[in-house]
Each structure stands twice: as structure tokens, then as C-alpha cells.
Length: 100
Image 1: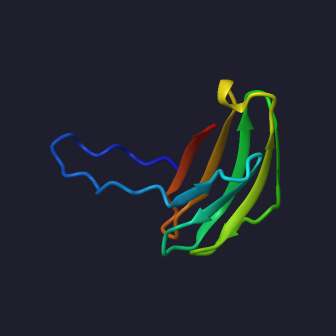
Image 2 (image 1 turned 90 degrees about the vertical axis):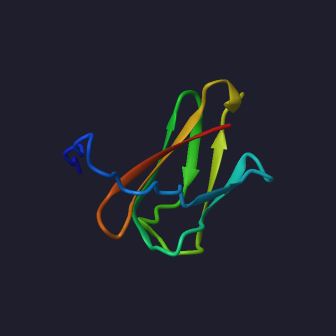
Image 3 (image 1 turned 45 degrees about the vertical axis):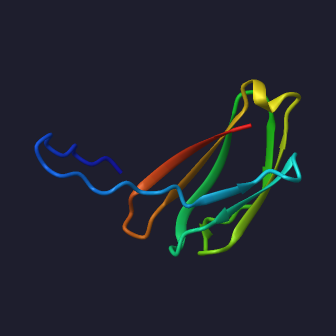
């Protein structure tokens, strides 16, 4: 959803902390946990660059719940990025790029 930009002289909204915590200890299997108090909807994962992403298809992630995914790439640190997409309950959409 596109929103008009706030005028430069108006106060902006407070920063929104990325609600995800990524557990990398079992690479190439990863766990992405919703560390917020909100149910996040419209959840998707996408891979950019060389690699294959395997994950289930939840469209909503409850507060405290986790999504597990596997990333197969020869050398993910050299150009593979996973993009996490979600929406907050108020409808605002966010993207977060995860590098390896």
C-alpha cells in the first residue's frame, strides 16, 4: 500500500523495530521467530540471487511463533539474500532483507 509522504515540517512516526529474530545456528536450516506482540499477516519469503529456498506456506505468523526455512546456495554470503515480507495489523507492509 502506498502512502503519501509526510511534509518535512511534520513529526514523523516513531521507528518500527524489525520484529524478526533469525536463528542461524543450524545453517542451512534457519528459524525466523516473530519476536513482537503482534500477529503478522501476508507473510512471504523470497530469495534473491543464486540459491533455492524451501519453506512452508504460513500466511500469518502469531506473536512468538517461528517459521523454519532451508536455504540451499553454494556460497550464500556472496550474493544471496532472503526478502521477508509481512503486514502489521494496521495494514502497513514491510520488507526486510536478510544477508548471509
